[in-house]
Length: 321
Image (tube, rainbow, N blue to C red):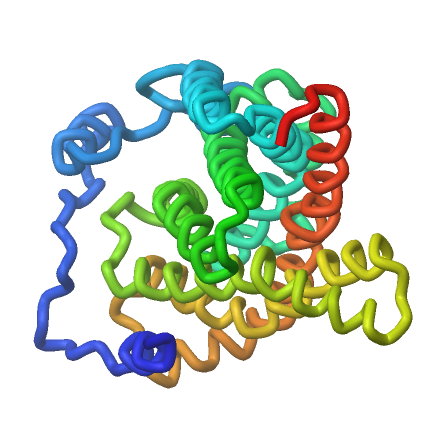
């Protein structure tokens, strides 16, 4: 299925066919009238307001309210299933890793769209975190990242408490991760892209789905298997588990990055030819790979280790499962 998605993504776009995206009015009028036309042309997602520090704000509910509501729902589910300490550990892990991941996500997407170089984006994001921490943490981007990884880690921890099989854990974490990740990446692509905002292409979502399936496999399914191999080679159990948890998500980026870049290319450049997409992939692969490897460390590598240790600490305090 992933091979078919990759092949379909790189088929040349027929110049005679209109894109499967709604046409937006040209921005040739005054800024106010253009903004009004854009808002009316895209009823699905509102145009975000810009806050201090250049970060966009959610135009509907406050990010803190969305994050707190989602956290409360997961804690209630964990309480009903008797594994609230594990859910709390997952949400706490997501809170710790949200800042650095947000900076890396914005830098990667702005570099892919040509809006800003990777190094400049990393520098700008770090400066915003230092000089405007409250605005940074209340921004749409940070809220989306927190909700995404909170849902992913909480679901994985619930599956662990219920002792579900590896295949069921992979399916559950992928479903929990995929919906939130689709929305997060589509919104970030619109925020970080150039030109008018438009709908994210369906084939782009297919590439994101392939990327997320690989990501969940390298994060929650493969590490226990690799840790068992390390232990059979004479490594201590905890060291083997930590080493496998850090290595697998980082190495997995080598095959996830092409799907990620292809999804962004389909949004940023819907009319590109096959050769243009391949050249762009060659140009962006190495810097994006390095950035996403760095992202995988707090995301699922060190984040996974923190999640495991927090679960142990919370369980010892609460006496739960």
